[in-house]
Length: 260
Image (cartoon, rainbow, N blue to C red; front, side):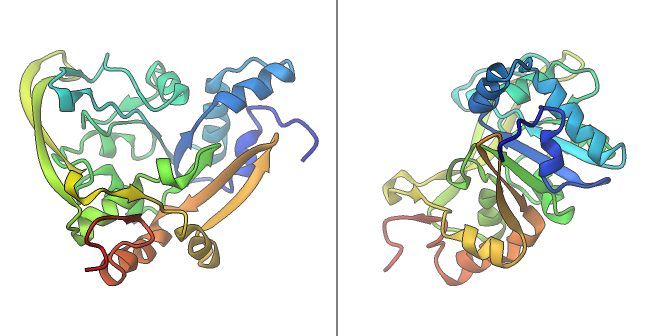
């Protein structure tokens, strides 16, 4: 693609439609450089508005605003704790039309039809059956990746691991102070499926992409010389679960004892 595509128009290439649920994962550095090179202001709100224009009020937009400081005993403030997963999440948190979900480790800035439903969730476990990840499975959320690979950003895999049960991770509790939307502080406990360090886990995930594509669940494309892809999360669940249950998660990772 030789012709420059503006931030507002980039979402037209995502394969999203009116009423869709969309999760945007990104590394925006090259996106910003491309804007500067072509004389466009690198305002990520324009990109967000481009998505909103397509999915409309019937759709739902989720932007990761993850922050793992709670694991270190640092107070989580739902209004003030920063997003540590990129500038698009930071931009979304500043907007009055987005809300933030409650989990202190895996929160999302959410907009649209199901925003209130997502914000109301009280999941203790990061990847539990009562979490936004289950919502993404049930609504076949379209996970759009801008210049990031699945190995480092397809978080949905960890939800499937927890649903299926695995031996190379275990559920660990973390307790710290929490300041809610009303400014009230309390001590809370949340959990996450963490790596068993003795297992020497190395994440791969790459082997799934060919299978996702064959199943019509994923496609790669390029916009402004930036690699992107869209994965329909609900369509990938059974593919990932089969690997966990029947193949000892060999397409997800390697770990000590996998071949025993």
